[in-house]
Length: 114
Ligand code: 5GP
Image (tube, rainbow, N blue to C red; front, side):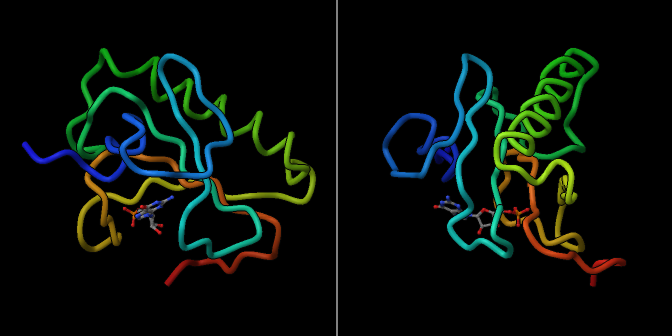
């Protein structure tokens, strides 16, 4: 199977502005940021979409949210507010099939999304 863009970033075959990494997770700036803060939090374990989650993935999904809130605090958007989003499949606009949590903030965000 062809590696995803995010697998190439994990494997250091593609450059990215990495803001956090541990043994389970990598987080880097979105190349096409839609807000002053737009970070992608990606598990190193390959999971293509939320539809493929297994109960054994509970911990990694929880850890992704812990990383999101720690980064929000570090980047000083925890008080002003931010959004955490998983897009799943076509109607939601998923373009990279390696799950990732978007952390978006630093400006007023519209609701509901389009
Ligand atoms: P999705 O649409 O799948 O929820 O989000 C994929 C995100 O990955 C998009 O916001 C897109 O801008 C970002 N992206 C796509 N290719 C790259 C890349 O090569 N580097 C980085 N840093 N972000 C990327």
